Amino acid sequence: MLVLVSTDSEAERDPLASPDAANALLQRVATGDQRAFSDLYDLTASRMLGLVRHVLKDHSQSEEVVQEVMLEIWQTAARFDPNKGKAVTWMLTMAHRRAIDRVRSAQSSRDRDTKVGIRDLDREFDSVSESVEIRVEHDRVEKALSRLTDLQRQAVELAYYGGYSHSEVAEMLSVPIGTVKTRLRDGMIRLREEMGVAS
Amino acid sequence: MSRSESHDPIDLRRLGAGAADTDVEAEFDYAEFGDVATELALALPPVSPSPDLKARLMSQVAVTPQLPAQAVEPAPTAGLSPVPSLAPAASSATDARPASPAEQRASARWFTRTSATLVAAAAAVALFFGGVVSANLFQPGDDAAQQLAAIVAAPDVQTVAAPVSDGGSATLVSSESLGLSAMVFEGLPELSDDEAYALWYITDGQPTPAGLFTVDADGQVVQVLDGAFEAGTIVGVTVEPSTGSPAPTTTPIVAIPTQA
Image 1 (cartoon, rainbow over the protein chains, first blue to last red):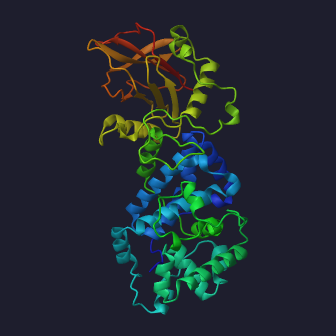
Image 2: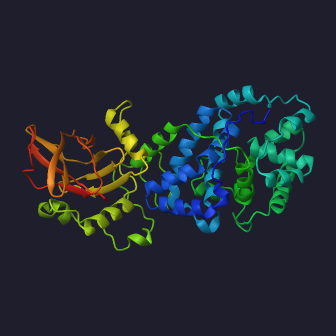
């Protein structure tokens, strides 16, 4: 199941509510400002860990990934270009990629398969569909996801929230990889429209 | 992420977004959909990291050099020498400048009250030297490393780097709330057997001994200062007889002011 069973979430400052704050902090971090880095960590770490743990499942591995990613953010902060996107996007992209890198290592995959039990390729389409319901906090995102077709939503959920590669999603859903890419792309474009993301 | 940008996910990798992925064809298209992905990520429940994650991270940050804005991929083993950030300094620090070697050596000034110039210099140095030394300095369980980790994790941590007149560099990491400071040295010359480096807290022109230490041929050492650190004090280093001295007897090889 991809449903989060943990309930230890907490209401925190949402970096999205103030993307400028994260941007400004990251630009100060680029000048070697450790205090700004500390603030940036406080602002974003729980969201980053929420994402990484959702993909990886294992808490201690997820903390390791967050530590690696945060250190990389410190090292490469000067390469963030605020004209090309938000700091939080830059950071969470790194985290998502690193989580997926980790999950694709053999040991992680075994661990996750045990916890998620979703890589059973013999499963019926329907049971996959049921198992990838995502509990979302954001009404806006939930509403936007509900506007997708079932097939689009599956592709988005498996590829992003699940961290599965296109070929893995194709196998799970027994459809050609090109179909997966099309559904995913259409789904993401639809989501953008529904959520009114300022790009 | 702008919709009009390149769709090539390699772009993000150049930004340092992660290790090479062998499965490029099958990966999520961050370049195109990073903005939407961020919304999806933020819709997940946050998970609080354990407190020691931040402590570990901040101690790494204190000793990990930053990479310049335009450069090759991050090297897995960062260099040992100080890496000045090429990023433009914050505009608020434009009047500041790194402390000159003359200032570092000027024992007369060293004993005087912290001047505004030195404070400004310290701020500039802190900006130019984000991280100074290799994380390989420490052995696990090292007391100095643990204390350094605690200092850099403190909310009021100050970090100031300065060159050492005899060669090498020194970075002072301090926290008034903890009452602790540590000096991280690199490239420090080895002394003869009858000499030692002496640390001093100088407050209102009065030096207080803060410990003796020596250094191996590798020139690297982390030294937590004896006594209580107070913001605004100056930390200095002299070469003294190995038995120590009640007050400095030689010109300091480095003196680092802190902000009150």
